[in-house]
Image (cartoon, rainbow, N blue to C red; front, side):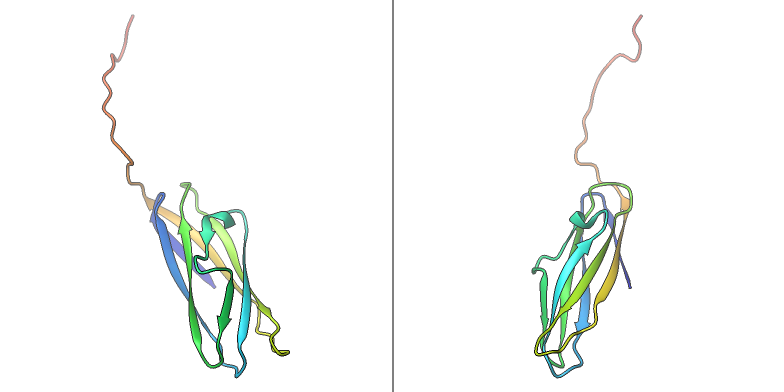
Amino acid sequence: NSIEFTGALHATVVKQIRLKNPSSKTLIYNTVLVGRDADDFLLPKGYTVIIAPKRQKSINVEFTSRFLRPAEAVLLLISKSVGGIHGVTLTFSLKSEVKHIEPADVLKCKSPCYEL
């Protein structure tokens, strides 16, 4: 599964991942962001996800671009045992692309083009 974050340079983009628990037991996942640009991605509601039985839960993933080059990371959701029940480990590939650049400010300078 791949999630694309597209936006302006220095903008924060939020994507939502919906997780379902079809079992009759609560599932608990510990989340880990790994990869070259993992520090640019954030889970604002924390790094533990609890999904009640027969329910679904959405988690937000935020990305703030710092560079023009594409950023990449992997989101791992690792199941924690609850009453002997384990969920499967989930992985999501996180990728970004900067589509445009908004100027922070405009400066006017006056200077001679050439002097002897």
